[in-house]
Length: 486
Image (cartoon, rainbow, N blue to C red; front, top):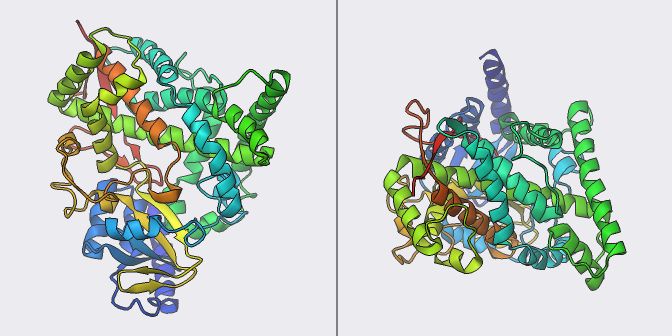
């Protein structure tokens, strides 16, 4: 509490200074402006994210375009599918991603991976990564990992299990195999592998709500944080060792084609004459790891939560899976069967709508003027797209706070940019298809094997509690799995 009061005092002084020094940009006098102060205070108090979303909607008056300020940082926020389409379909040269300060905490970890790079570097590595991801679309590999998940759950039947924790363990194993053909062993025992502990420490430092509120902290040189820098160095050493091992394997067996992302990118880089230096490969692997692990485990946790909260949905989904896969636990679905799982797909899409793992999906800094509505946005304007606001806009979603997978089955026509959990346009998430496939495999196999419910004393009984971070996290989400009797 003392810490919160201290930060609140600092916050007030910062905003008083900011209001004296900053005004609305010229030409935007009639654009709604929301103060970042109440939003920042909500973050610092760790309010549930749906409360923060409601606060932003109330402050902005539900407008699809508004200004906000955090300290001295002024940005334009897009909360409309129409406006999101204009920005997200701009050429990469006109609206590139905001570049990170090389001394910042984000750059130290994420580097110049696909989500943060621009120009020729982005185009070259996107060209390598796209076919690499297509080669890695293996339901069988995900199914085999899900069998390990089932073995892990078997040891914890009939008692509350931290579902986000076990989904993280599962997606880490999937990503290890997908990205570089590596097995971490997260599902072999309750003990978390050391390198995953290192990774979690790094991520927890980066997504701290204090860094989100006081953005100038993230711009400060991070070398003084020895613990963080040592963790980065250790994780980097792990990634560099894997890259070197893969390079040596390819040299020894050039005709033994691998299916993991790293091997595919090394082979394609050689074929296309694209330089795949070790630092850039490290950056790509780190970004794939974070995007494919943290976001997918969040989405899976949301789906499992709502299937526990609404048993009739769980039974309907199970009936569909049994109809397509048969009533045989431990069955591994194939690609053709996954395409038939319409209701399971609708569950996943609704989970991604109601609780998008990354509520603010992109920061862009314009290199060319862009016209949105009656406004011509000048060069160097900073914009972001608020996916949470778009996903909860009652103009596009009836009863947006209600969890209803049926909305994705009724063939209702809606704006193509009203659902953007993976962003959209040329900078959309390259792992979208893999993530959706992975979620369908895991959910369908769990439905064949188990029933699951919320504990009677669950803090999430009435609604899902979400920690307000850059990547959303469920708060103490536990479920009880029981084995089905066929």
